[in-house]
Image 1 (cartoon, rainbow, N blue to C red):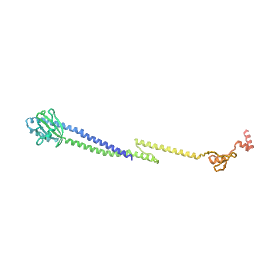
Image 2 (spheres, rainbow, N blue to C red):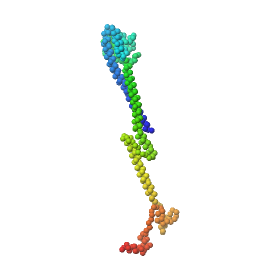
Image 3 (cartoon, one colour):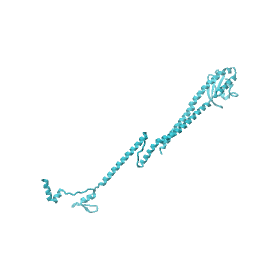
Image 4 (spheres, rainbow, N blue to C red):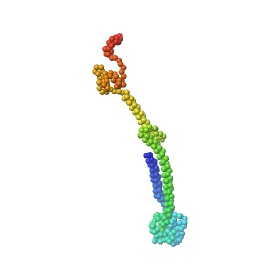
Length: 318
């Protein structure tokens, strides 16, 4: 049935809308939400890095590097997001580090920090996962640079959790919407199916009962117009049948004489198609619906009954 396409369109429209909403929310989570979480982490990391850098200046100047290393260890124990921390001098040599054997050379070179910068941040990919590297110069870089690495795994975990919730919500919405679409399509297509069946029956010439649609929407208006059309046509057909029957009766009552009639110039008899001669009144009675009532005209009455005619005239004069 063509009305299945309405259900299909409703479901596809719902599916497309839900899919678009879900994708839009996933993109939103991957961009806007991630950017905000990253911004919060960056603010937090810069504050921590600057405090550690300020606390490390005296220890670095007096070459008490073990105190700096102990601060790094305490920081790691207090904040699970801290992946590493190290201080390098202006020549790139390790002064203190959470790494055993010193910071990896590629990590030292990955994020250079200028002496005029108060702080600098850069996302890096390390063997411990993605990190946000924060660099803070010590005394404008004269005694070294502190690098603090904060894990981005928590941000990824939070974003993935949000994405999972969005997917579950989208799937739930799709299922609920599909059920609603099926119910809505049935409500919409039921009167349309009635109209379609009625129109099909009417098109085949069958007798048509009024289509009952109680809704006051466009479908109800369509049903009312259809019922009025059927009723008007029924009246027109009844009137046409009545006129045809009247015409048939009229034509059945009419008999017309046409053509030349062979008539005797003396006795005025008419010759029939069979060759016999008939009186005029007999011939006309047989070939039409006319009937004759015999009388006598004044001329014939005077010629045939002169005495009676004279008496009649005298009575008329008196």
